[in-house]
Length: 108
Image (cartoon, rainbow, N blue to C red):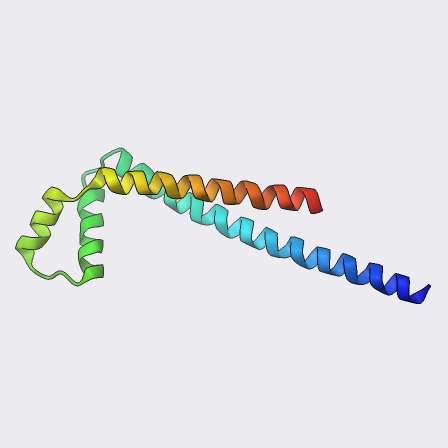
């Protein structure tokens, strides 16, 4: 009888640990989703300061220092491609968020 109680207690502990891990992953995915939706919203509404800021961040990331090159990048940057990528990332994060929530509800 003592062995059965031990096995059941271990099972519930493992279930709790797995559910706790899914909660953390769900909460992280939700925060990342909010950030990506915010960035996509800024690019969608074509705010004048957002697009040059994005180009400046990319130029800094790749190490571009030539002013003429950065100006050319500002004129020809494919904002539509960035928006499409952000929409795909949003879809992916929503699916992950749904999956984590469904797992928690099924286990919890």
